[in-house]
Each structure stands twice: as structure tokens, then as C-alpha cells.
Length: 106
Image 1 (cartoon, rainbow, N blue to C red):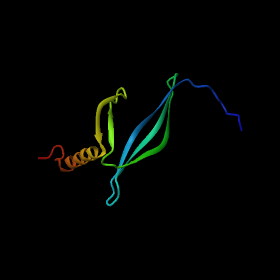
Image 2 (cartoon, rainbow, N blue to C red):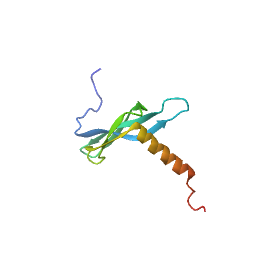
Image 3 (spheres, rainbow, N blue to C red):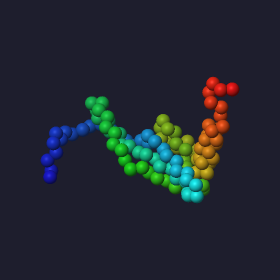
Image 4 (cartoon, one colour):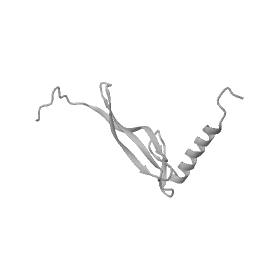
């Protein structure tokens, strides 16, 4: 079938973004991170279409080096961090949140 109902050419831009990150840290298993992705298409008339994509699942590798990018430009900053350091930061954030006193309590 080649007929496409209401087919129209579309001009605009599209890109991939990550709206959600899920950390899987099950006891006795190698931790992993699932980056949930979506493709965003913006037409020149302002219409926006969001298409979900399959998650990108990355296993934890304590020695893996990750270059740090500027989120505004996508350009490398020249710094890098290891998966181990990221894991330590996330653990620290959890431990801090878990032990912090709820707002308004003394």
C-alpha cells in the first residue's frame, strides 16, 4: 500500500531528549541506568509531536569514563567523571534525602 491519507510535507526540526532516567540497583545484580528517550518533532507552524522511543539501558562500569558536556551547547567541557563517581554522588543524594529532617519539623 502506498496511499497515505492526508499526506503533507512537513518542515521543521527533530531531536532526541531524555524525559526520565531510571536507576536499577537491585540487590545482588549489576546496577544499570535506563535512559527513557523520546523524539521531538517541531514543525515550522509550531506543532510539536513527541514519539516515545525504546529506552537506552547502560550497565554500571565503575571504570567507564564519561565526558562532561555543557547542557546548553552540547560541547565538551574538558572534564570527565567515572561511573563510580556518578554512583557515589547518587548514593550520597539518597542518603542525604533519607536522613534529612522533613521541612517544618524540629
